[in-house]
Image 1: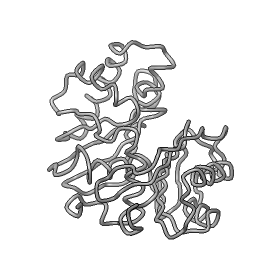
Image 2 (image 1 turned 90 degrees about the vertical axis):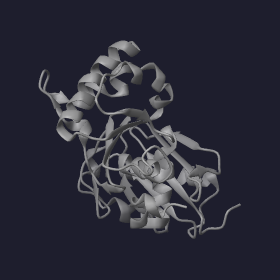
Image 3 (image 1 turned 90 degrees about the horizontal axis):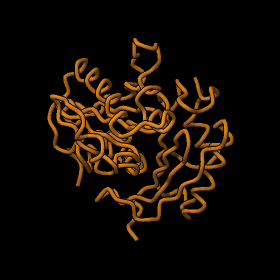
Image 4 (image 1 turned 45 degrees about the vertical axis):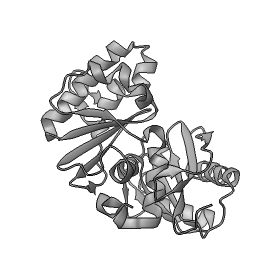
Length: 264
């Protein structure tokens, strides 16, 4: 087992599931089984906290000396959640970091889920050593995003919430993986929606690289080749584990985790 200085726990809270694992920070890899439970119905703070206690118990990592990071689907500033994507509105304006620290009896670092996935790819994956602007998107219940410029995270972008004028809804309601499942789309039909989304983001930001994360990225060969973009687009190296790995890295390394030149 690695020493406490080289490993940490990451918890990734999503709209449908909560995942956690013990991470080796030298290599950016899980060194435990990945534990996953369903997100409690309604995703109220107290219920989510209880579920997180459960996954930590199952991992056997209740020792407060092991650093813990938590990823969450919301805008997070100074430990406070300012939005609520696919979770209870009680999280809006909520002192989430303090709530979890008090409830778990340990220090934690609380951050946006797509941002921590971006950190994982920045330090250990497809964004490592990339110059210019990289945009990571996570395709799942919604669409999360992380902006990485010359190895530095620009936090709390919400590119899943750009508007599609044709129907006045957020882009994620039209193009997230959940929309594919809801509307029973083929890969080809879903790729047409993704084409609109990535072309729009490409026009707005002129990025140098797109990275696609989330569980569906394991099927990247079925939809990424169908997209026609000027910007290279690749699947995330860490796929659906990126939130766990990035949360763990941020918990122990803090601001240093935002720069890829500190890895190793």
